[in-house]
Structures are given as structure tokens and as C-alpha cells.
Amino acid sequence: VDLAIGLRDALRRGHLSVAYQPIVRLADGHVQGVEALLRLPPGFERDGVVSPAELVEIAEDTGAITELGEWVLRQAVTQAASWPGISVSVNMSVAQLVSPAFVQLVTGMLDAAGLPPSRLVLELTESQLVDHTGPAPAALQALRDAGIRLAIDDFGTGYSSLSYLLRMPVTAVKIDRSLLAGLGTDPRAARLLEGVVLMARGLELATVAEGMEDLATARALRDLGVQAGQGFALSKPLPASRVRALLRSGP
Ligand code: G
Ligand code: G
Ligand code: MN
Ligand code: NA
Image (cartoon, rainbow, N blue to C red; front, side):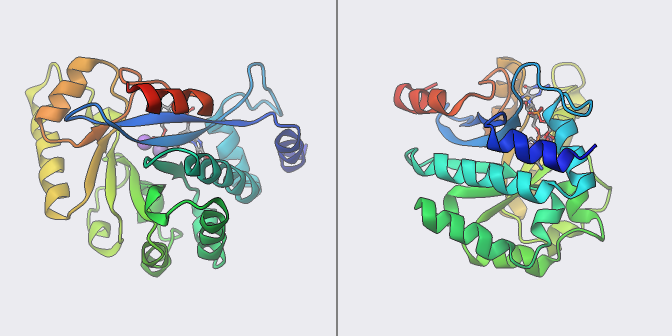
């Protein structure tokens, strides 16, 4: 079975979509950006694939991720150009980033859409950054030189090496939700997050906490100095039309 063909077919038929989860400044609730997330229609099933994460994983294994990733990126960049001021974060697979033509592809999309490069954030997981098959620092620097921002996704779940933070020209860390788990109950969870915040400040990295499921967690993270957050307590991923309404009315 050829998922690549199934995928191309699904893209052409408009079966896939992109949802946008608000990223909120914790100090005042201002929506500073959104994360683009691939979405499947209800009842979507192709070769046993039922979730976006599974689709991404299979696309990575079959090479179809280049096409899928490019489609998501173009959707996100085009949508974001129609929204005032906010940034759009897009998840990257390593196969996209290691392509030598990637910088031109992205800057071409930004130009065509009229989106300033500083409003695009590319997210790479910590494990992709640390792995030896991951992008070279120079490839990331080329994106930074073009004005595009780079965030480390799932921060705190990759490898124990932190030395990559000194090599990779990233601009933000997205603190994985597993680090938020003990916040209400285990005082050590707060100490750990304090350490992450201090480190991020020292390295001039922005901080975004992921997976805030209740407002008490959002408040605790704000008090610990985390700058921004996303999660079901603040907003679920939304269709593009609802993002526009949200930006008009406030959260
Ligand atoms: O939204 P959800 O929790 O189902 O996402 C599951 C996983 O799929 C997450 O790890 C997310 O990073 C990943 N994902 C969602 N959209 C994309 C995408 O466009 N590209 C890549 N590479 N991963 C994505
Ligand atoms: O791996 P990545 O961080 O890109 O994926 C983010 C995923 O987390 C998305 O699939 C999104 O649907 C999911 N997500 C967003 N907010 C929450 C939350 O508050 N709780 C949980 N469990 N998942 C969330
Ligand atoms: Mn992400
Ligand atoms: Na994450």
C-alpha cells in the first residue's frame, strides 16, 4: 500500500486541514502566536492511520513527509499573513530541514504570502536537534540569517546532553508538558522549572510551556517566570476562521 499516493490524494481532495492552537503571553493573556497542527477529518482512516501523529510518523518513514510538511508550511504561512501581528509556529521533520533547498523554499513562501520572516517559528524536537542525523548548525544559521525563528519542541524529553544549546542558533524553548505534571503536588517540579527558566534567560531564549490543562498550572508557570503557554486550559487547537474571531475579541 502506498501511503504517499494516499496522502497526495488526501491533500488534493482537501481531506487534511491545519488547526491553530493559541500561544498566550502568561503575564496578560495576550495571544502572541499560534502553533499549526495537522488535522485529519473525522473518520479518516488510511492504511490503519488514525491520528496526525501516526500520519506524520508514517510519512517520515516513507519519505512523504517532504510533501506533507511543505503543504502544512504553505497553509500556515499563507494563513498567518492574513492575521495581524501574531507569529505562527510550524512543526518540522528533520528530512525537511536537511534539504539544501529548504531556506529558499521557505523564504519563497514568505515572500509570496507577504509574511515577515520574524513571524515564522520553526519547531524542531530536542531529539532531532541532538541526533547526529539532524540539521547542521550552519543549516539552522541560514534560517536565522533569513530572520526566521527556531524553537526547541518537547524540551526536557530528549537526551541528557545540553551542549547542543551552545551550538544551535535557536530562539525559544517549548517546555514539554511532562515537566508540568508534578507542579501542584511535588515542590521539586517547581524547582526544576525555575532552573529551566534561569537557563533560558541566561541563553536569551524565549520560554513557552506546552500542555497547560488548568488555569492553576498557567498561574504557577507565570509566577515561575515562564513567558508564554499553550494548552487546553487556554485554548484547544482552532480552525483558522476561529483564530480570526479570537484575535478580534481577545481570549
Ligand atoms: O495535535 P496532536 O497532539 O495530535 O499532534 C501530534 C503530534 O504530531 C505532535 O507531536 C505534533 O508535533 C505532530 N505534528 C502535528 N502537525 C505536524 C506537522 O505539520 N508536521 C510535523 N512534522 N509534525 C506535526
Ligand atoms: O509535539 P508537539 O508539542 O508539537 O504537539 C503538541 C500536541 O499537544 C498537539 O497535538 C496538541 O493537540 C497537544 N496538546 C495541546 N494542548 C494540550 C494539553 O493541554 N494537553 C494535552 N494532553 N495535549 C495538548
Ligand atoms: Mn510542537
Ligand atoms: Na512539544
